[in-house]
Amino acid sequence: MIVPFVSFRVMEKEIDSELRSAFERVYERSWYIRGIEGGNFERSFAKFCNVKFCVGVGSGLDALMLSLKALGIGYGDEVLVPSNTFIATALAVTYTGAVPVFVEPDIRTYNIDPDRIEKKITDKTRAIMPVHLYGQPCDMDRILEIAEKHNLYVVEDCAQAHGALYRGRVVGSFGNVAGFSFYPGKNLGALGDAGAVVTNDKKLADKIRALGNYGSNYKYRHIYKGNNSRLDEIQAAFLSTKLPHLKRMNKERQKIACRYLKEIRNREIILPYVMDNVTPVWHIFSVRTRNVKCLSKYMKENGISTSRHYPIAIHQQECYKDLLISTGSLPIAEEISATQLSLPMYYGMTENQIDFVISTLNKFKE
Ligand SMILES: *Cc1c(COP(=O)(O)O)cnc(C)c1O
Image 1 (cartoon, rainbow, N blue to C red):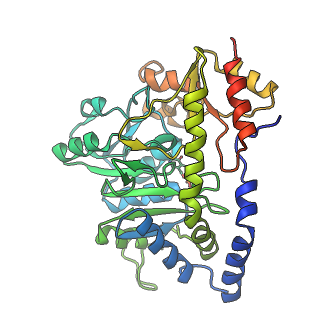
Image 2 (cartoon, protein in one colour):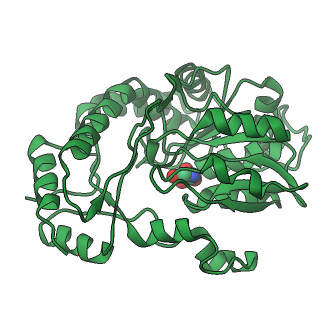
């Protein structure tokens, strides 16, 4: 049996005619940037996130970078980010001119460890960026408490967590502002690059909208030296088509995760720990094992594709050599990158495929 790591086939088949008519609707109008579709999607996504404002942008990276810029963060500032995340979280900080400062995660949940945040706060710290990694919400009560105590902004990176719940409330509404990615592989994906910012702060939303539109909210009047980062009409129409299906599709991921958590039983494999006050949306199902190369090879030989998130920690990446963080100084991130493997997880996985992943893993011997 072949089990791909991810597949859009079943999902796209189910909504094929809806996607095609979304395209036609936009094409008929011949209006491609900043129009009806963008506004409609922003309103429905704000509602989905239980916040007042949503601003569509060009990518998840831009959503985070523009959020930080709009908060006035830049040269001379520091922003706390988890040491185990996709590189975009750190790059968003770097692009503002500020410095990303890494906080180690809790190795059980893979998320930023609140107990380690305060040690990294200095006079220069302006914000904390919790990343709801792999779709599991961070410990937001603790993070918000620390942020309030030290007068820091909270910018949530929700790129992997569309619809995930913390104490019954959807992520993206806890911090001052939150960034989402609609990269095709994300739980809510466009058919290309796209992203959005959500917030309850109108001034911030207006500023972010201007920053993504050459620093202008009135034609040819430029208040800021902005970027070009806008959600285009075609992608907005596709996203509006897919949003109503998101809850159902997340539920299916939750069912798969539930089976993995219950039925994978192998002493060589460490399963992710789920906090009891959260409902993850399982963008990625991440396990750990001593010999990750051996396990991924074994899975491949059995027809099952896996992936790594992420094989090299950010502080060990070539592009971040300038931070001068030596190997060994962020041991938890290094341990995760050395031992982590992601299992197949996508809408449309069949029961047979799930059975097969589980039984294959249970037979694994190093
Ligand atoms: C995907 C992702 C991003 C960046 O999103 P893009 O749309 O690819 O720019 C940022 N943070 C995390 C955690 C991500 O997974």
